[in-house]
Image 1: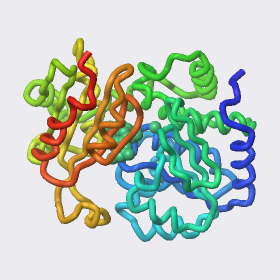
Image 2: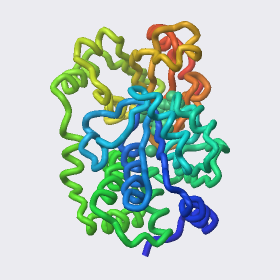
Image 3: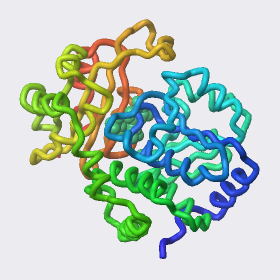
Length: 351
Ligand code: 5GP
Ligand code: MN
């Protein structure tokens, strides 16, 4: 028996908004990860038989997520702005999954805010902004996918097709590093037990996500660890950064950097890890970039009671979870690195 985490108000709020809706748009965050894609497509499969449901994400997702059932139906806004705009304008319900504020979905953010239809937010990041009619926000939940499971469970859903179950499982698996963090409570395994009983092949899901990288990605990992990783022992900190030229050399594709930021944490006494890479400024964010054509994407991970979200928020205009955060910097990589070096000692613990 799985406990009721969501309040009755949240569950009934969803039921009330969903009932009259015919066209539902599901939105998730920039640089979609397994939880973004998994939670959104789980909602898609749930609604699939009774509504016109469409998942829209701001930009491309990595190839290792393309096998997830329904992935080929996802609309990528960057490639089809007008189509995304019109789907959002015509929607009579918008469900936002796995992000806490409109800023996290790029140009889709303003489109969603401009839409007159009701909105539901399902998320597990801190500080949800107040834009939805029903907000289901639980920062203590390891994944948005688990919250989708709980919502459906509490709504009394009886039909759990294998596609739906696989999407939820994949989101839960990826946001917990294959159940290696944020995964210490029995109920999680009751949920997994249910999903596996619905036909999820969890071994296959693991292989498809974690063992399907390109040769270029593998060599990039080797290069990062051998040539690029800097360690600052006093502050238990590791830093890796890559220029656009270096990425090009390794034939970099979306998703190739996934997981690199976690690797230095397997060194004894390294508790903070930062990974930065050059990125391009997209057309829609030119104004925000103040003339810069370069953007630096930053990822941070930490262990235990060593938050990195405040550092990412204050220094890199970002945020996230206590132990997994990110941010961005418009400008040169060397300037972003210097900004990191000038500030980390103020935020990270020495002991
Ligand atoms: P990743 O390092 O995998 O890109 O992101 C880890 C987490 O950090 C995400 O789940 C998200 O919560 C947060 N995050 C990453 N980039 C940004 C950003 O630019 N802004 C904010 N607010 N959060 C971010
Ligand atoms: Mn997530």
